[in-house]
Length: 391
View (cartoon, helix red, strand yellow):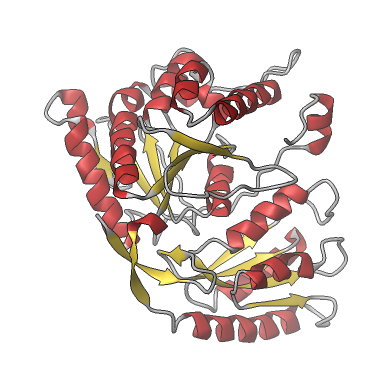
């Protein structure tokens, strides 16, 4: 696995999909964005459902912008209502700086919804026509950046799907590609192992600090928050530590180059091929958009039987649960549970499927599964109360 066929962007990044992103800057423009998307093939709607105010929401806006700069996106159309404080140029300028065609429309200035939809459709079709002329070219595997996430975890996750993906991650790193895992709360208790894998003390200290910060956010004294889902418990997991050991397995065994931060001040990007950790949230929909913002082209998802879709970054699902596996699952790892298959063999299946997906083949439900582009962010007021500051 030395090369793949991808879409080369003006800034040198390489995508495995060629999408038009239609961004609703505020939720009031959601209907307009969807009406335009219905008329334009290979378009994806990204809506800010949180607020139309900029102050305090810099992390969310940064995730939105960086997702638009993801190499799977060829161009973007930005729509806003016009009465909020998020100026479209805050979003269009950095997208244009990535070398992508981008246009914007303000409903109030366009004098109404129908006019905005008509004008927006014309602009979107023009952008789509431009990016549709981009053809796949052969690029080195070093351009590949794979997100790694678990969800719907159960006892089979730590025995079958997670170690199989971990072995596949090792192979990808050895090929010269990159991978990144997140959900730091689900690495709680694994700090000593992670420190040993960090390339230097600074990276090790950052990993430990960011895990501690995430624990503060989710384990606030006096609250009754659910930090391990009921589905995990039904699936046989009893503690966060037990879940963490399974989650750790999906990161493989290669050295950790760095931990990529996602906060109100920055979204880090990989500096060289290799394995990374990140502040990607453990929450599924938000994680998809974090991986998109980090620049990942594809996600390996380990699960007992559940799955999610992200319309920007395709998701390959791996499951070892024989009672829940269905046609949504891309990789059947149940043979590990029955003793008829091995981690090594399943990892090869993962690599082979990944190879077809990055070269243009859809995942099991990529073309029919529907998912919102969830923009997750940490509440800056809570961060202050918890004495957590971006470093």
